[in-house]
Image (cartoon, rainbow, N blue to C red; front, top):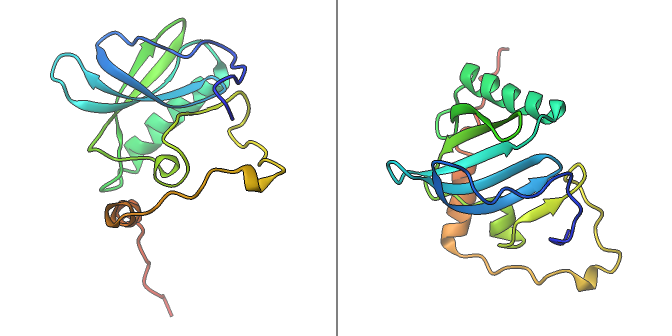
Length: 156
């Protein structure tokens, strides 16, 4: 979807305590960014809801709780849950230079959707973007994403 999507509120352009905000996606009330903390210059991901939208706030709280209960080695787990904006919340995750699947395979542009995040494909698929050429590092990044998949032994 294009950047002209109608969102329920403006995309955040400033987060106190963070520099170099780069939008990854905005879906409904949820926004995700890459950023750098001002105090120690550490790279982080931010996932936030800038307003008191109950469903989105519940989703962020659930993320916080779930990741606290099920820490997966190699997965980015949230390090902070703090109030943000007008009754909203923000999660902060550590970052190690990762890229999203969208960046790797579809487009480096942020994804913006006013709906569920599942948009209709264009009717004319010939108008779709050309596939990106994959490099060895792209494939390794995908494989690292699946490092945490475990196989349980058969109990026969």
